Amino acid sequence: MTQQAVARAVWCASAWLGAEGVRDAVRVEVDADGYVVGVLQGVSARDGDVVLDGVVFPAAANAHSHAFHRALRGRTHDTVDGGTFWTWRETMYRAANALTPALYEELATAAYAEMVTAGWTSVAEFHYVHHRPDGTPYGQGPDDGADGDRDGDRDGPHAMELALARAAVRAGIRLTLLDTCYLAGGFGAPLEAGQRRFSDGTAERWLARLASLRAAVGALHPAHQVTVGAALHSVRAVPEDQLAVIAAQLPPGLPLHVHLSEQPAENEDCLRATGCTPTGLLHRHGLVTGRLSAVHATHVVGEDIATLADARAVVVLCPTTEADLADGIGPAGEFRSAGATLALGSDQHAVVDPWLEMRALEHGERLRTGRRGHFDPQELHRIAAAGGATAQGRPGAGFGPGCVADLMAVDPRSTRTAGSAPEQLAYTATGQDVTAVVVGGVLLARGGVHARLGDPGPLLAAAIARLDGASSPAADRTASPRQGARP
Ligand SMILES: [Zn+2]
Image (cartoon, rainbow, N blue to C red; front, side, top):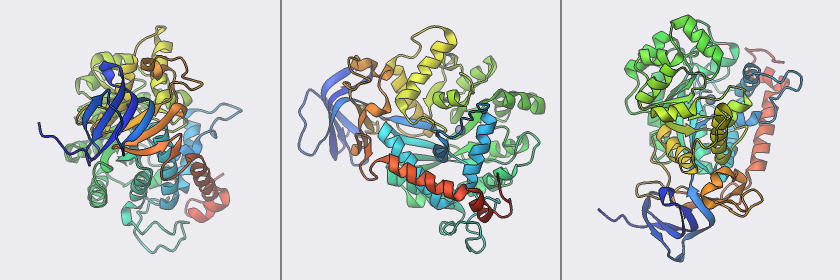
């Protein structure tokens, strides 16, 4: 085996090495591209090493994100009727329609900085806010500011996508930008006004823009930093004849994600319109394959589970979001038993904390089955790190050769973790206990503070305040005159 040159190293007071358990004084040698090339145990740190105290784990890979949903945290819980998934969605559309490339970049930068400090070092961004609020692509016509956006034409038709890529680069998080096809407002239903900017009109136009985006991103960013994948918003949003076009023309090798059976209403509508479950409909068109990541998969039947697992698809669970939106508890245990790869996502970012997602996965199974002990800590870490990386088509984080050296250190003596066995920290730690985060062997956060961007809190507050200013009723009239004022 060729010995790659060691460019840098991370020394860990203790490190969790998976099946080997926790070992002390572990030195992780990293090459210039950020991959692990060697792991030494029982050695001292050398000059220049990044030194991590506490217990070091592979960092987590976030398999499902909508960065701008971070602006909704703590604002959607109606105190009168409690709200539903569908009333939450109305609030989300108001935020979506206020976004400009500059506001999107600012908010995503802050959201990604929050992710990094909590221990997520890569993210699959499920992105569908492509065009101006009235559906006109960026880069067309004079940029006269009439739509409230004076910066959108700088990057031409990919203004929103390149804004996300810049946000990820600034935050140092690895980005898999899932450019999302969104064509309809439901089965046989046209787009609603609030959905116009999501749509390219047809699958062929979406495929053409996807190809152009891949070229644009590839010219600007190395693949270890930003790659482009694909997504179908849902079977609600992509008519069946368009699914067939996508199945025939989507380039091989690209990750493909889809929101699947998050709500019972989607299943009922799909059955009525097509005679199939959402999984069955995708399978009918050959779209359930090893590159597919099915997000949520909460309301699936046994045949759906077998179809997804047999195809070696990834099932992306978002337990804190599914709890917040009252989606239900998906059959994670059945998926695991059937052989599906599991991954975790923070989705709407009511919680940005891989430790709480891991715990919510296990707790959901306990609540659903009345038994403890479904996912042991080793499996939870594997789901959070390797599972999320698989969903993104990326190498996983960890200590083995070929892994990326993305690591998070946890304080085993905090208020929450004191007394915990190091192997059981998955059941006690939170993102607040993450004392340091390393990406590709380079220190990127310490004590909840981002090395380049500082404390994410003020960044988030500023970005959300600016978005609020743009989405006020007065701003709305200026921002999108063709849609009129919203309440
Ligand atoms: Zn989602």
